[in-house]
Length: 123
Ligand SMILES: [Zn+2]
Image (cartoon, rainbow, N blue to C red):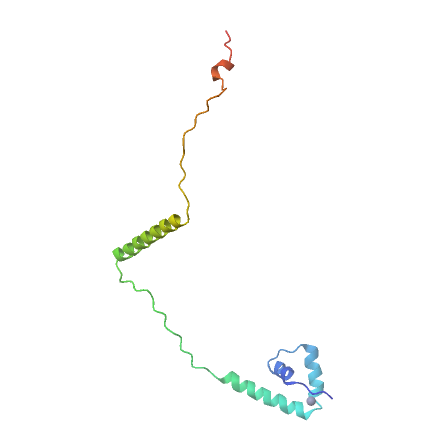
């Protein structure tokens, strides 16, 4: 006869067993004092663990102070913008990207007809 292992007994205590497994354990437990004793021990241990209330202290998260003035916030935003501009300029200078220069170009052999020559005058 194979005895019920502790994991299966713990599942029974935690009411995690399927109906078929529960019925199979019931049949075994009705004739096995060893497993019945072990089931009682596991049940007692589980009850002890469940009754422990840990002393948990929730840490206080400091909220941002609201006494800062609007000018301080504006100075902070301006500083971030300046830092961003300088950093962007430095990156663009170091990446080797050259500026685009647009040069006017004239087509010397243009064959474009004046638009009025395509129409005829009707009277
Ligand atoms: Zn047994």
